[in-house]
Length: 108
Length: 121
Image (cartoon, rainbow over all chains, first blue to last red; front, side):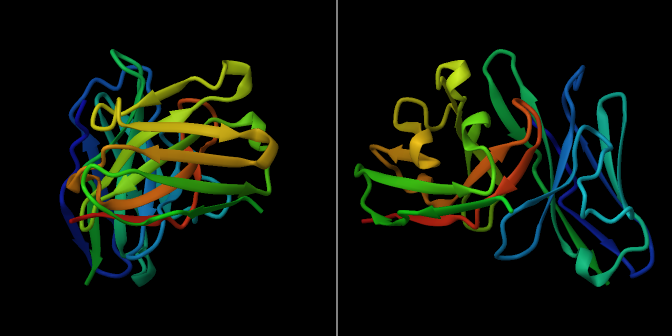
């Protein structure tokens, strides 16, 4: 099970960054998104396709259409520069967590 | 506040063994499934494995890359998670993160700061 993301996305401050995640049949699986800044541990920014943990700015939103999940960051700020990973739990045939290939968001 | 603090990383020779530990606090440890996730230098995230809670018999799941070599265990009396790495390979070099499952099989909502394991002769 491979989740494919674009390697990089570049965006100007104040604009919108869109990160896609696909490559498998999501079915009933929930998609989750993590932000990782250099030298830091990942943090959860969106869970269950579109829900935000407390502390995640509402500029971050998740969505899903068919077999593609999307993380959208509106009004991008310099502090949003990071790597972003999608993730699902796969139960067939083995019980494993699968991470996407990761997307580096660069703020111009 | 949830805290996960890893320890035990370091340099180990190929074929050797190492035990990582994770001290948990700030939540009811016994309720949650706990995982290890690793990240090789300059690479993406890779799930290593998980241990379920007592209600689910402390059963475990592992990624294919480590199955048969790594063992995850927990001590609920000490709020502690362990990863025993046996017969390590150069490709096991990575930062290892201790992670809490929010709900079983769903998001990983709290991560430790990680501990670096380097496998080299």
